[in-house]
Image 1: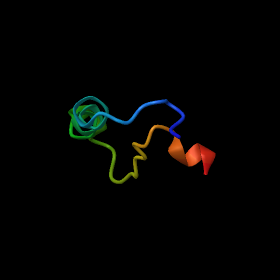
Image 2: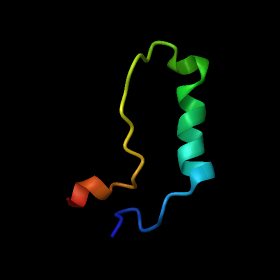
Image 3: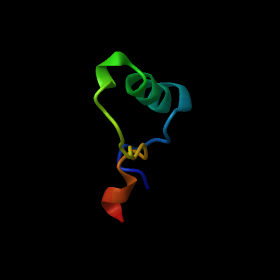
Image 4: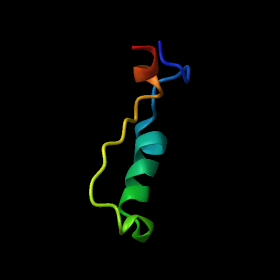
Length: 44
């Protein structure tokens, strides 16, 4: 199962993360790994 109880939506869940990453607010970010998986790694 997924702790958030639903599958991620590409437009809202992933799209918003992409928009944030390419915004000027993230200009100082040089590298990161984002786990967009609804908390699934929390349960192993």
